[in-house]
Image (tube, rainbow, N blue to C red; front, side):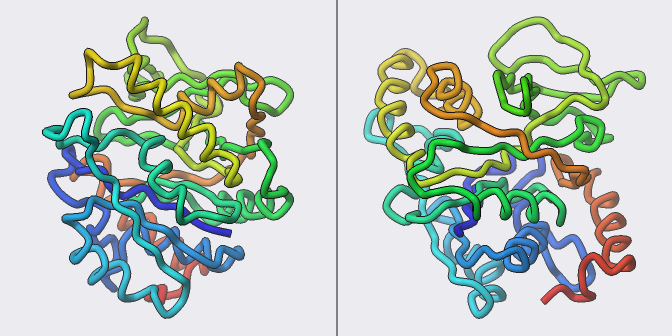
Length: 292
C-alpha cells in the first residue's frame, strides 16, 4: 500500500513551510507521526507531492530520516501551460493526478500538516487491504466535527452527508467555533449553517485504488474547460471529484469513522497545543520517545 502525502501547499496562513515545523523536542514534524503510523499498519511506500523548488529542503529534513525505514518517492506538482504565470497550486485533485505514473497500488491520501491519529491509520489500512486494485469502492475517514477544530480561527473541513454508511454529499467549508456553536460557511458560496458537534467531517484522508486516476484525468480536462475565465484562482479539488463520482454512480465512498482527534498548525498559535498533545500521547505510550 502507498501513502500519498499532499505537501505542495504554501502554508500562507502559517507563514512558511509549516509541514517542516518541529512539534517535539526531538525535532520531529507532524508528518513524521503520520509516516510512523503508516509503517506500523502496513504501508510500504510514501509518495510526497511537493513543489519542485522545495525538493532539497524537504528531502534533507523529512526524507533523510525515513528513507531507511520505508521506500520514498517524490512527485512535483507543477504549473500548467494554460496559465504559466500562476503560482498557487492547482488543488488537491490535481496534486493526486500528478502521481498517476508512480502509484500502482491501493493508496491512502493525507495532508502533510494534519495529525490524523493511530486509529485513523489502522482503519484506513484495514479497508485498503480488503480492496481489489480495480475496485471503484473508495473510502473517506470520517472525523467527529468537534474533534477537528482550531481554537484560533477557522479551518477548511468537508461537511459530510451520509446514508447507510456511505457518502452522499460533501460541502467544503470554512468551519469555526463561535459561542459554543460550530458554524460552517461553504467555500463555493452559500449561507452559513450550524454543524452538529457529532457531525461527520472530512480531513482529506481518503482510501483509493489506482482506478481513481482515469476519473481524475478525464475530469481535469472538463474542469479546465469549465474554468477558462478563472484560470488564476480555480482549484481542482478531490472532495468535489469524489462527490461527482458518487452522484454519477461511478464510485461509492464508504465512511470509515474514527474517534481520533485532529491536531494541526493552521495558525502559529496552534503549535503550543499540538506540542502538548503529542507529548501526552508519548507519555501514554501511543508513540515511542523520539519516534525514530
